Image 1 (cartoon, rainbow, N blue to C red):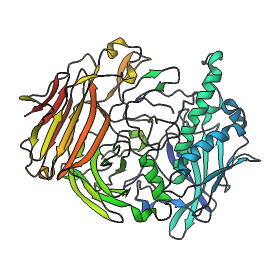
Image 2 (cartoon, helix red, strand yellow; image 1 turned 30 degrees about the vertical axis):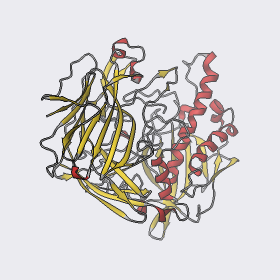
Image 3 (cartoon, helix red, strand yellow; image 1 turned 90 degrees about the vertical axis):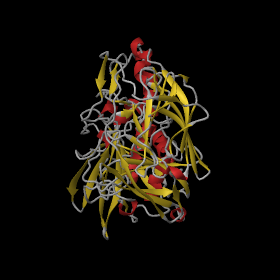
Length: 556
């Protein structure tokens, strides 16, 4: 589905581009092998016993670390070889692509996204249109249109395939990619004079579907998304968007990409760990650690590694914790990394178990984790806290944080030992939220922005930053002219979101620690608030820093 908005009802007859969904995983037995289906909407999840968004092909446990991940049978797709796909002679391709041959350029663009990864051994090729229609488990990799998909009309596409045992490991032997039944017709509500431009836009959006589903064919399941609010400018019937936010992975659920054929650093590393280029594994390292909440393991928390230098939000790499709260960040280039932990944002993508805590405050850890090639660095144990404070919709009052307020300026203030906070005076930030289109009441909720810098030294010890608020758990339903809560079940289930837009972040070593600079923005009717705390006494109490339209303040 296209640029997804939390809680938006899917249109069953419309294949909106670019789809970034994945379907429920199922298995059925065929003679000598098993067939799996993944793509379109959801991914089945058993108990999580490891670290990344892979499956091992033989158990319900998900995710697993790369060493246990299901890979292709080398007799089918060996190192240095090219995997070949056919296009089915499916008349349904004529609806949007004019012919089965017409889909080939869009498939090849999606293939090129993955094959261009320099650290991965990935090569694909389209052989052309085959002589007969696709048959599951026939040993061929086929792209087709499924007139009878199992999604109930809310599917953009899915990947399915077959595998077998080789030695002690389950191996993939085939992967087919389907466009769902929405691609068999054009919505009759589209005006006739707009049909051709609509078809062109949908064809372009198909590249995003193919990119996502080829990722599933590689062995990737759904990645995590960054839990911060996105500010949109929406225009036109297909919802063209200007996204003021670092993109999430192509393998994340329901998040618009800056380009339909784009991949994030997280996608690149995930693919490279499955099919590494020769010698690449000797150049990378790993960070391991544990996340707890109230003294218990924080199961299925998401942890991002943010590299110092460059563009850390766009180059971030993420993993999930296992049932013991452990995380393993693999595929990292040597260097310094800051860590950010948060609960999962898109619940429908992962089938979050009931035991998982979903109201954790987002936490930035106050010291670097250093990575060396072919080594595992121990990041230690970090405790996150529960109790997100949700902001009211526009027009409803939001209580201010209590306590004495000390202004924070460019010279900074010290809330904890070894930590200095600097802030510039807030200014109006351009760009509305995506759901403000056509509604003057919500458009009046202006946004303000500021530059916030955190200087962490070695004396800060185990101090960390919790984003305590605001968080948002509602969305604007423009069709019904009402505000509705995020869904907690179904295809578009979404967790509450950090209602602060972080457009840019810079991390650089500074003295015995590092300096973290963030360009943040927040709605006028609320305030961006964060708490500093430390179990080793570096912070006295839990001081708050808050930014509203009048400035940034330390609250004690």
